[in-house]
Image 1: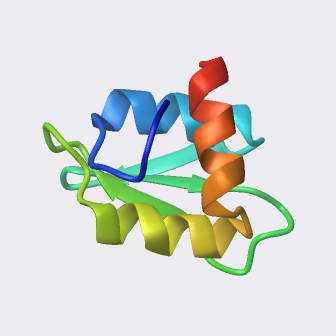
Image 2: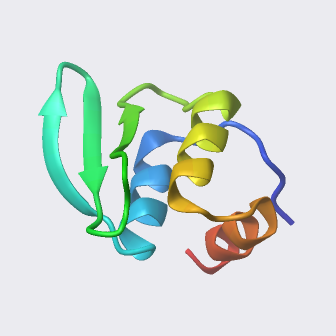
Length: 76
């Protein structure tokens, strides 16, 4: 069972692609993803692990709850 904890950027990238976002660009070491219904892009660094606060902010942008996020991660 997963909980809200730091994960690798590659795993988070798989999650972002799974929920329908597409890669837009790279700015420095940050990857930027977008979706037509989002007001803001989903941005995260290519660090070894993405901190929890970045995951929370991106979940808020995507409109996804923690329980949905965890169930999607279990599928991946």
